Length: 311
Image: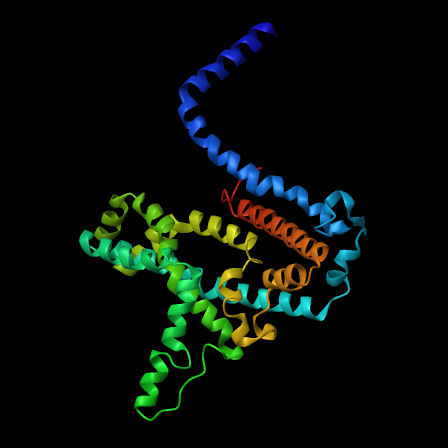
């Protein structure tokens, strides 16, 4: 027993000496994660209180499950927020998620390294703009007095109501996400494609495979693991559909078309001083996201993929 314990301790010491630089480099990140992500989880206790900021957690009255009534009883405003969130999530999974894959495949097919770098830089640039800037750009282009309507009016055509039209709001949000983040999202797919053995392409070309068949039988299988991993993570984040992006444009289209769960928490919970209800909704949302990730990961294991983690 003592021999095995001594061996274990020496092995741990050896690993520490080998990896101490990496461990020390990770300490600030771990500390930030604990301070700003895990420690605030303790504040979820206010979901079971009639929380009053001036009384604090210790002085606020306990209400049990009363704050969850908006979820259980089906508050109309909450149900509207849930409906809009689910619709926006479905639209973005269908139309946004595949675009980085297509872009990565197209970039990977470019023979000129210089042209590939130029296109990548152009595609990456919007990611570094804040949502305030992105929304302002779209307003300048598509707003009532924007570039598009100025062009139409100059030619005697009727102006288009896009920015303040509730019927096209989901399409507007989706187009903004595509323009801002699709290029940046290609990085992981390009990294996966760079690991593909080039001899596979050469062998398929010798066998007479066209570029399309090479893409289907070589490139796409190389991306399968990354696609499943990112899809699982996207499901876990499916109830987060862009708080900052939506809140900046909410006034123009109204709550009926634009209210999602995150903005409901802000408008009803924070602005309305319903702190406990806001915490209750956020807690349930987090639990649902956790269940979605675990379930999707189990499905990935059934199909032979690693997913986010191996049990």
